[in-house]
Length: 246
Image (cartoon, rainbow, N blue to C red; front, side, top):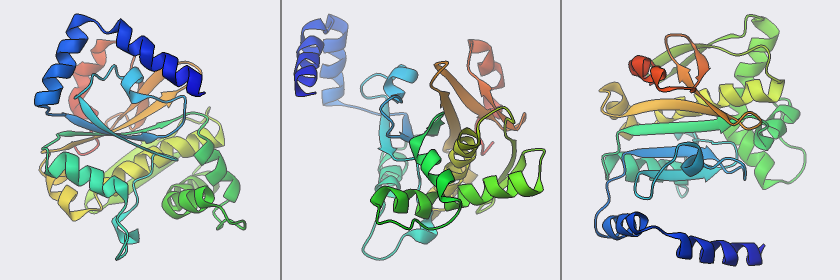
């Protein structure tokens, strides 16, 4: 792997265009990101590639399962990196857009689904992580499958409410992944320093979901109550329907 990394760095250095060199020189002096992405750490999901993000455009936070730990789970002596990143981006740097991005074939969601809502029986940091911070997503999926075959769900957190219909053609872990993406987006609103900005629409909150096999990114449309594919710029005609705190 080190050989690939070293060669990649050298290729990056030698292939930089004059415009790219100028861009790096500019962001070295001043930078004003306009967004923050909270995504899964999966090796196949790179927001910089999927969304063609340039250096200086956005903060990026990555973890197993694109989790945003709920504020009620924060305790004295432990501050989640995700909360710190949200404060850094939205409070200290006035970032106006938050994107929580999940994806298909998410191994964290496969693990969460396999736990069946129970705490892990083995000593495992990753299983403890996905159970502790993803169990609310699993509870929603389980309730949907047992009690509501229409795959219709209601989401609510700290005054922010919306409804969603999950695609019945997806595998259970992928259904869970879409639910988790929406649930983790809601968790952003559990923090008091974010609620005011979200309520006032000073910050807009979006949920993205990437289909790896088809290399297609979906975005949640609050009016249609579902994830819709981003296939052309016509989707911008309904831009006001794409943030879940509209």
